Length: 148
Image (cartoon, rainbow, N blue to C red; front, top):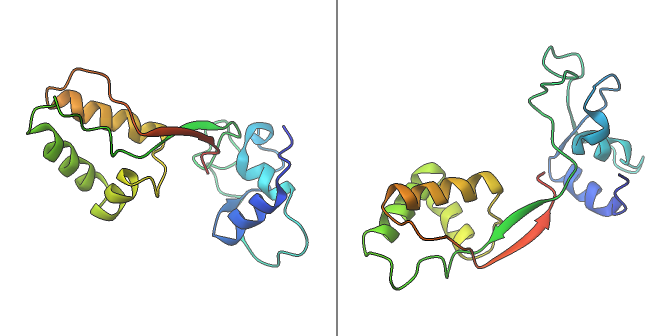
């Protein structure tokens, strides 16, 4: 896969995204960190980089591996809480999400200013189920993007 938007990569690198140059890594052909590193232009003088000499790097279980396939992020939770939902569910789920991250993140997720990654979508669904809500949970929208 050749990612065509080099400006996106430069923006990620400048925002502190860690790239990788572990040439002997068995996962490099599918790793977003590797691909960003390969497309890093010489005009960018400094950026974060994985230490290829670290014992867990460049293995088939690399903890820094990021899949280069786009994933489905949820966007917004303004319509997630429905009118027929029992009153106790919304505050319990809200408090569970806030305790998992923080109130700022919760409101950013709720108001669509921060995308909700797949793992957090699952955790939110589990919070609803743990509080007695058995119906499907839907978010305000969905977008495909890289899981940076």
